[in-house]
Image (tube, rainbow, N blue to C red):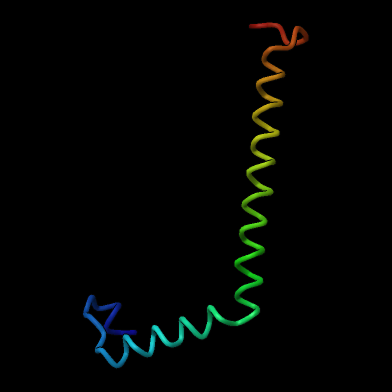
Length: 68
């Protein structure tokens, strides 16, 4: 890890260990649930943004709001 911070390439052994650990982490159910939760949150946030944008657009076309 210190080698990476110093801008040096890790050894092949360390690189293989990092890849092994990353694979182990990604295969865990907890990690899979985290990824699914992030995807669902992103979808929800997209819908919220679309709803807000539509509200702003509808509000700007409303006769209630008078231009300044």
